[in-house]
Image 1 (tube, rainbow, N blue to C red):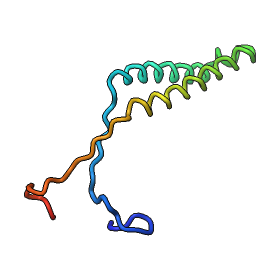
Image 2: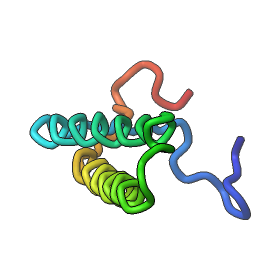
Image 3: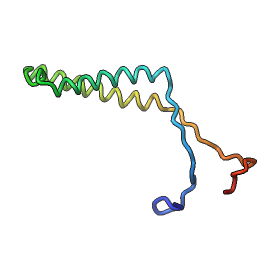
Image 4: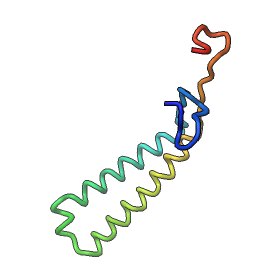
Length: 94
């Protein structure tokens, strides 16, 4: 594949490594566990038995946690490493 959309590819076969920030990764995992738990609660018969106000509270908490997960995901993966092909490597030019 030599093209990307209308133009030529500029970074053929480039590898990109996403490196998480370990400090933020633990917060992300905790937020994900909470978000998943709230999603499971919404699927239970107990949830159906709750009054509307309690159901809305669970839904709001899940939405808030989802937003937190998205934010933490962006923050955790801010470091990007690009591989660089070395000219003195035998595979250069192939």
